[in-house]
Length: 30
Image (cartoon, rainbow, N blue to C red):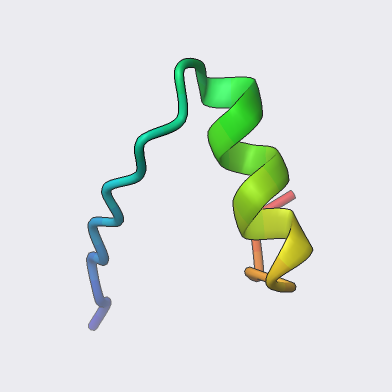
């Protein structure tokens, strides 16, 4: 079983989006 989560931001790039989510301690898969 799994769970797919979609998050939409206004970031201009993937890097900006990742930085924003990382600031909220979002658990990224390594």
